[in-house]
Amino acid sequence: MKKYFVFSDIHGHFDILVKSLEKHGFELENEDHMLLSLGDWFDRGQQNLKLVGLIKYFSRMKRLISIRGNHDDFLLNFLLGRDDGTFNVKYNGMGSTLIELADHDANTMDKIRASILRNHPYLVELLESFIEQFELGDYIFTHAGYTYRDNRGWYNYNFSKTPLFISNFNPGVKTYVFGHFHAYVLNQYWHKKAFDEPFVIPGFIGIDTRTVISKKINVLIFDEEGNWLNQS
Image 1 (cartoon, rainbow, N blue to C red):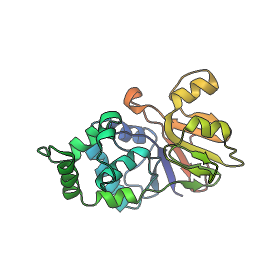
Image 2: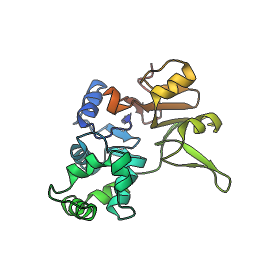
Image 3: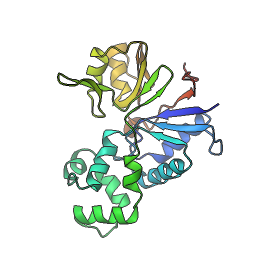
Image 4: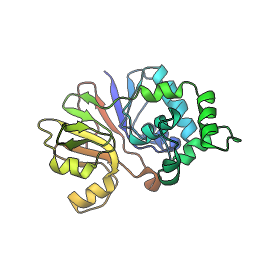
């Protein structure tokens, strides 16, 4: 039976991800061990290139399911020329990703984009293969949850204001698992105690550990029938 090792918001921290997966029993050679990322692989950390290699390897092995986080969209939109990347370099840590992926002598945003596309011609296709959400049993996995608009109702959005999603969305019989918003803050608000372990209330589980600060990554393990195996 397959096991899904679920994590989120790596933000350029390859070593922490590998150690966290090993700690939770992930086996590199076990074809039944699947990776399920809730997005935000890139930016802020200094090991983005290694993460590109990991994504490429496990995608080729058909052992990775990755939901598209907003930081993954930042990189994709830059590579496709939808924006010039300046805002995300200045405010969202994308500079570390571009420095690692681009030629060292690329000194304009256009040259950076061109060199990344030349050096990593598969990267756009990989990013475009990321999905919006994934479902196992009664669990629905997203990056940030859902948002609401009068003309659309509730819909999946990887830049959702997660606390509003938790406060206003009726999950029904499902449980929504997400990253994006720090579990530390959610635990502080709902449980009156700040900590980085998963935020858990009926219908919602938040797993973003503030990896840049905490140097930790939460890993949840599910079987293919949707049973949470390492629930504490």
